[in-house]
Image (cartoon, rainbow over all chains, first blue to last red; front, side):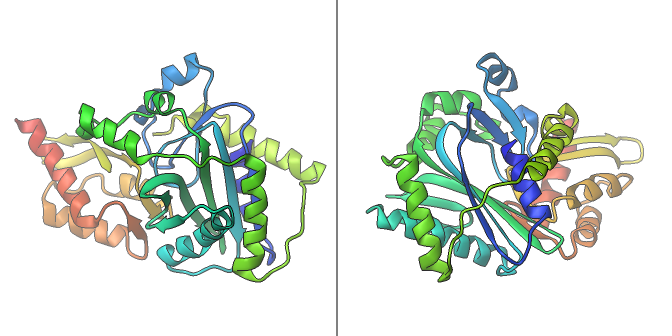
Length: 224
Length: 83
């Protein structure tokens, strides 16, 4: 449903940008638009009741569990991909900064703290609207994460897997703390007002339809 | 990283089917479907593949691979098959 809501927000984007903050009721692995389903341990995900969803954005697979996830939708954005990542990630960098966390934007699409990745981002653009979704890891079970996300064959060696584990980290803050910091950061970065919003029932119905037709559809999930 | 799954006709040295997967970014995303369908029938020669990809990817933005590296990867599939 989360991916369906993000898609709905993008396809119904207005001149008012939307920043959505959300979490996951159940653990889930999301895979990039171009990835093969074989890039993750699909069977293990099923066995461990971890959902699998294919995104409409590119990039790599992500294990969503204890994290804060966000999406940003706008019709006004820098046309250059790198510039747009940088601008939108500034919301995260600035927000975490107010919590005393020295986060950095690490091109193309990562957020790092002390050189370790604590969040990633992925973008798509359709019909004049941009969607960027991203994550901030609050608590990460690296063993579980790397047992579900396969390391590419060329990288399989104990050292490489260890390196990948080493490069991932988390921030020791609560979901609410980070959410509040991001709301404040939006005002700082864009000099704008923020208004809380919820989806109306009819919009939720549309999202459910998208979820059913695309994100719960094996033809989509297993398309590569 | 880009992975190429290639089926080719050894007699005519042409691409029969191809699947390009990986954790890269390509805008617009649907361009990948166009590549996978339109490159079928192309001779497995790097210059020809590169030219075809340049034409199919005109106006697209790529991150995580280049046209040159993808052309190389396709040719390497052929070479790997012949070993």
